[in-house]
Image (cartoon, rainbow, N blue to C red):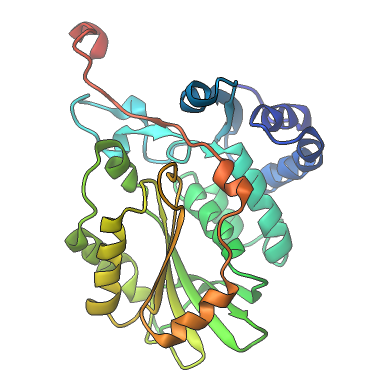
Length: 314
């Protein structure tokens, strides 16, 4: 691993296939951001992306940064026969993607200059290793809308409650207000690896605990939105589960917007609308960019290999 510097950041961005001129422009900005966040520890490295190399025959690297203990690590695995999110590692699990950080940096400097590079709650969340990746995801989601204005962070919709939504902003001038909560479903990595089902009972319990307490019923000029970031594919099963929950099992959320890191065979973007009011939002939605879709994420999963002696696997 290497200590962050402008030169090392630039080299890793290029290794991740960012154009040299763009890497040269972004590297000092990224270092400025790293210094502003002030991690207790920060190191950079890169891993070869074997899947891409096997498919294309070309060399490809995933530039990553390590910033502390996130709560998940392949080193914590106790049984190779069991797959838990706490026993997994990889990009977006126990480390960050440097190209994704570069992308978020661009979004933040453009969309929330009143928060970025300033002392604030956002900085504290980015500095906390257990919150950093979720917070990065929340900022990335701001780019899913066309020209949001009046962006506010951590807004309490229910008076007297400690629960808050990640963002509120207006679209089309002040015609429409969006209240959005972003959920990066890290546990969806397990579904991706094991091909488990996406169960509606689990999703309903999750939303009852983690989403619904943050919202009140939206007003006429408001839309309450749940943004979901998945690690597995947006399958027909996922669409049907979310549709059933949105329409028949709750009355607080007007729309669910879904993105995924796994889109080799299916779409990386999906929208579920509950009412006519939510349709107004579609005119302002942006799908992930080509840069977003080009990012590769590599997971590390414990496996039981009978060819390896038990003494080496323990």
